[in-house]
Length: 263
Length: 352
Image 1 (cartoon, rainbow over the protein chains, first blue to last red):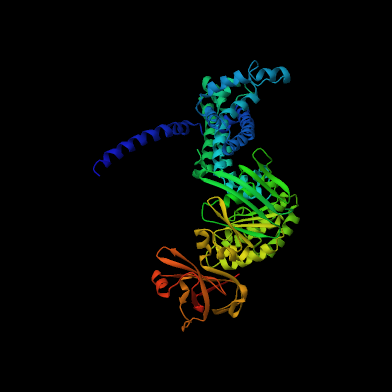
Image 2: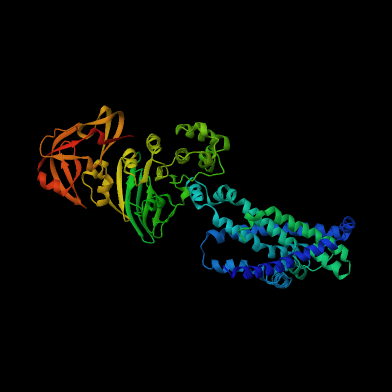
């Protein structure tokens, strides 16, 4: 009983420091933001291009993530194949890998002389590095784990009894997925998609390494902010940063606690 | 056999080693009874294709559905089977009508046609008015009937029911049991029911199959099982003397035309239960208030804990439970003459 007070004071102090580390950058942004010039800062041609590119690339990245991630999550959740644990660990790699390193890896795989890239280049004249499509791919790479983890948890938690009942009523595995599993899991899946999209939107390291920083082609918002900082245009950089901040806050607020439980 | 179910299977799951040979003809209802862990549900799931068998074969109407090892496996969605699960498993996001229509949609029926047929099935199980309700709004008994309608709607060759009444409370079971019997009667195919309740089995099935520790220990009608139980479990299962019969007011006529007087008037098909400890034996005609009394002959004495079970033959075979002291006093032994007395109030009657 007696030792409790000092211990909790230490915890409180630690929590205060942790909270400050998290909150101060956001506060700094809001405090230094050029609120008056916001409208004009965000409507310059460069800013508009960055906004458009961000939407296009993150949109496509989300499509790629969903198309590849949902089947992968389903197989991980339902099919007991040898090496399943290894695959699951591999899915987590983009989460811990420094994004720049991820970009280098993408170059080595999909670059013009890369493992797969050489065939794309020789056979289809497709060159992914330093292109908008490449930016989308880089974003998909970092966003995939978010979707796969959430979706796998959702599929694991789905009621197998209902799926069995559906099978006995003549539903093929695909119909079972569409008519029984999806209706039950879509809220969690939607949360996973939202998280993946937010992550794709904010990606910098992999994008700049694999897709470069070509204005009009790959200057998504984070890359444009970097460019503006380099050339000393702090106000414009802050304005664009606020856009991303607003999106992040909106996504988190929209998801609510119960859907984030899977992470 | 042509038509009908043939399931000679071996399934090993952890500590359970199931080895059973089940044959059911079309139009027949078989009840698989047994203690928990005997393998009844595993057997049912193996027939449905929800569990793969380790050896043996499953065939319906001569068509082989599964053969192991290294044979074919027809997945559950391509076997013509309907399954009613213990926990109904209605789709929570669909109405009762759409639940019943689910199987029909899977067969390619359009939405309107499927719903029309589904509505017909709901009417047949007496739930026409609840078509728009969600499963969460239905009572346990209603949900189970919707589940039955859903399984029947796909016109399965084999209908499998896994403890269909287990989730219901004691007051709703008799009514649902009667309903189940009527609904099953309308289904032309094979019907296999898993239950641990002897009343369910007696009311609904033509034949019982007793499964213990993964093996079939006895098969037969309720009467046959009661007459010659081959194991302790079977004896306990039917140990409460069970007689199917027909009520005619204050009298119930059971097998062999024997007439039992009961306390409350009853009419129609019934099952009579008399607890062994309610049976009174005496050396001469009893002068008691018991309305049912007859002369009989002792067949067998069995010790059962601190009691003795006396198997009595005669116009109505019955089992009495008495103390060892009583056995000595009455000089009960094989072939001895006794008088049996049972009060009308001790005769339990369940309308089926």
